[in-house]
Length: 282
Ligand code: AMP
Image 1 (cartoon, helix red, strand yellow):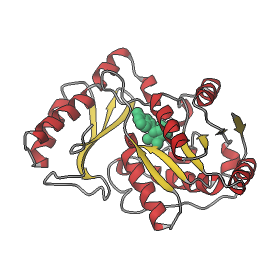
Image 2 (cartoon, protein in one colour; image 1 turned 120 degrees about the vertical axis):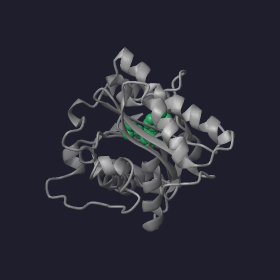
Image 3 (cartoon, helix red, strand yellow; image 1 turned 180 degrees about the vertical axis):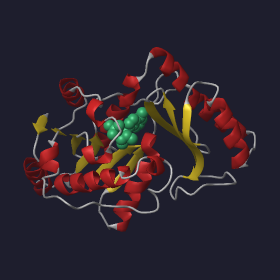
Image 4 (cartoon, protein in one colour; image 1 turned 90 degrees about the vertical axis):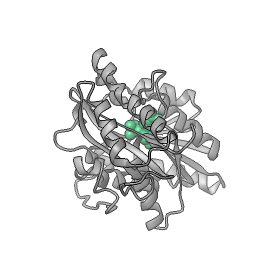
């Protein structure tokens, strides 16, 4: 596996691969790999000839009071894991090379970024779409794989690619969970043992919502109250609980196909998100 540090070298590598008639699958990440990231890498390997994983803790997607400074990092472990997965290139640029001081362009997707995580993290999605647009230009992938764990991000990027006529296939990958249901996340490392127990309320809420929908409940408002009650049995604070359409992210008052239960909570100082497509088999 090659480790590439600069956009210019990365672009040169991609140009050679494309000239040889091969395709590139991209997995954008912020590192500190877990099984969720690794399953995205496997998916990219299935879909394209060569696999590039980007590892970049993107400063412009963090708010001033967020965890940029303490975001978990372990480059040598990450590069070993990526190599074991058969990744061809780990692209790990420096912030100064991605955002030279004179840079002043942002890619903004409007509307879809107003609610859910966009409401509590102003500027976050502009940071995400800007870095993903740059990665697409540098790496020129045939497909890019994103986790449904960040399902708003997936919807926003899918929209960006359609709106800009970008010839990149956006592939959504199911959420990978721990054995007890906690969605894997680099940020789980912040949780104490008791906070980790409290965080399981997210999965309990999903299991409850799936059961109620199977029983025929369709009023979002009723289920919303039940889910909030369940979450608040633990010492967590709710940022949002919402039932939205998976593509438009518009709230659904009457639950139907495409309904996603989306949640963000704080457990101690740690912000966690989770979601579930309630009508999908899994
Ligand atoms: P991150 O490093 O947290 O920015 O995540 C990089 C990619 O991995 C994003 O597309 C995430 O949605 C995806 N991802 C993170 N956690 C999971 C998970 N538990 N299951 C599936 N995909 C995930």
